[in-house]
Image (cartoon, rainbow, N blue to C red; front, top):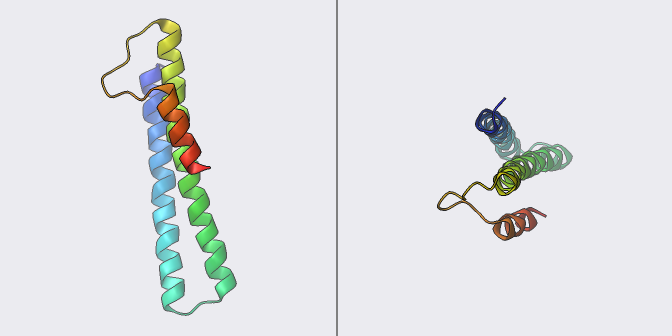
Length: 95
């Protein structure tokens, strides 16, 4: 599998995580509007947060792997491609 195919697969997985998170968030909103038990709301909200965090980490992980692969192969960085320092900063924003 080429790095482009791997990146496309990883992006698809991250998008699927975010779609699940969207569904979970809708469930949280519905639960709050129907005055559901606060424990259920908090648990659902925690699941949404975790799903979003995992998607973010997956995106950054993919970008880091691509940067390392490009550096090892001596490939030129694409215009607008994040540096390792920028990726580190992005990673820390999720922590």
